[in-house]
Length: 245
Image 1 (cartoon, one colour):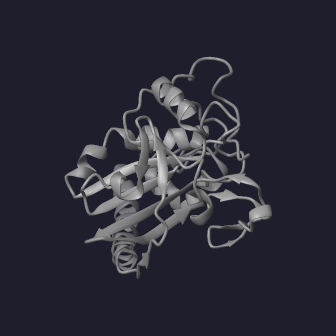
Image 2 (cartoon, one colour):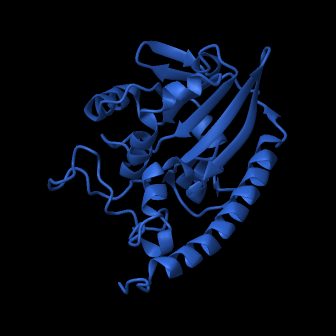
């Protein structure tokens, strides 16, 4: 790569202040976007979803754990595989240590995958994670929230458009509980998930950046360097591409 221009401290300060003005404008626009996101209308969840957890059946309302808000990460884990998607696993590494702070804001978190619970539990032990993670293998949750695509079932929409694909895909959905109602307020997919990866936001502040195609971590194959956190420095068992089915 070609290095940025090398200048005096005074010249650098001029350039930095120019960038700071742009950063402040971006922060202002982001605040407005955040408010618009919070103000989205909500949809009543009509189905009574029942998931499989390590101790048996778990309803959607139970995933709230008595709190008003629930964030669900749709963690790609094909039922035919023994490991979850490495990119989704990286997302969970970035999130797992901070979930206690969500609870302090009346918000619970859970991961949902279509793999059966024995496979989920085995991989969870390997990764040493302790967040709630349940299986949707026996219900329609993944299909209804557009993270499992199967044209044979009429499930062909991803990221709010038709997507020619069959299998598992990542996403994040937000639910709100009001008295006896459960409401769906938000879902995001594809590059909307970049916000979950704090490591990328740190790399974005370095000269080398993400070292991927124009910073697009979701571009096909561009995140192939990511491994399971117990596989760095070793061979195999962590470098395989994300599996979609």
